[in-house]
Length: 151
Image 1: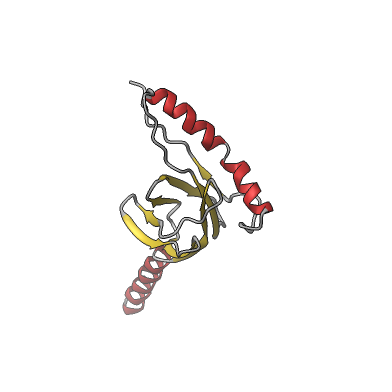
Image 2: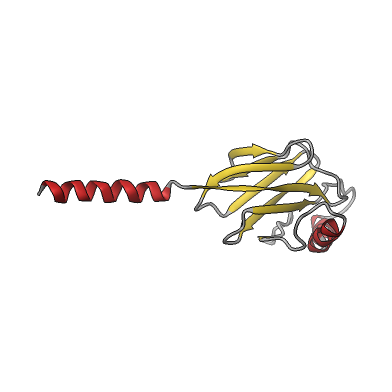
């Protein structure tokens, strides 16, 4: 009976430690005009800051292995929410500069923003060609978040 209880405790403790494993994500963040994004916050769960980029836009953070969504935020740049693909540990992100749109409706602003958003994969390839990034294709997916929501 004692062996059964000890075996059960060992299995429970080992399975708990499996779920608490972390993975290391590293990479670089630039803006859509190929300037480095210094001191950008890197967040998970919308509120937990896990790190910041350095002055050259590089970062290295440890996140839970189950975490798939990472948010990058910085001043004067629109937040970038990315969803990691399996076996993705090198993340290179192009963020869109934030702009002021005077005398425009939110629908028209979103059209302009979406047009810039669709160029991000092309900008990623261009950053690779210039030697800024190590890969020519991003290993994550990113969704456009509009300001205008239909009712």
